[in-house]
Length: 370
Image (cartoon, rainbow, N blue to C red):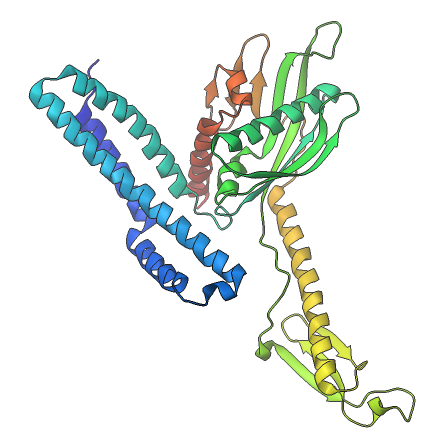
């Protein structure tokens, strides 16, 4: 059946219109100009952390703009190729156009999915934890298969990963493993992989060759940026000075050198009177207050991560994807109905189509609830 290039190109252009609308190229160009100005400041690298932030943000913004404008150019190139092939009746040129169209449809689809990643945490790096569930040694082996699947997926895309923790099971496989995927939008992509995964196969650990069903849980949380220092605005502090208490005759008692520092938003109070001068006590109190606020912030972040991870049981009744190796070969996502008949390719990291379907499903769900 002949390809209707006109209709296909029209559809591609409509998709790119929505991509440009979401991306907001004008705002992105303004942001690039601002970052370029900041990056050209001569003393930028006096603060290496800030310099790294600016240059990374500039690189990401430029890539984002190039991704959209480059795709627009490819659609235009395809249109020219189709016109040439049609006018000259050149079957080879039209065959080339058909191949370009197939690739372009895939790439535009991926770009469209990327614009759907606009949640609060989607742009963050990801921390993935995999835990074996019901199914004994088969479940532990399945957990290791899933970990390899995600690491291979990251490797295919040249995404850096760091394995943070592995707890090996006694006979084979993993009790649990945690790793980071250190690239922007890793959380947005992998968040749809969170849930219970189910494997059906002839168990390699069963000497009677029986079919075994086992489960593993995948938890995905955003990497919340850690801070080793907290700036406290002056207007959030209430500072009282008073005379230090203590045995008479010591120099600390002769002046109002003690400091009581109250952080107004949280109500945290720090008193310091160990030092002899008010300036020293004030500096010491600020250090202690910063440490307390940092501990509080990390506790809140941990609570947020736990809440976002949800409660994944890894057992019957709540699975989101099935991997069947016996009696037939199939991987099926139970939320999106996306399925493929090649489990070995999936376990080798070929999961982009599952992720794309999951992102579209999740956004449609959010629209319905909105």
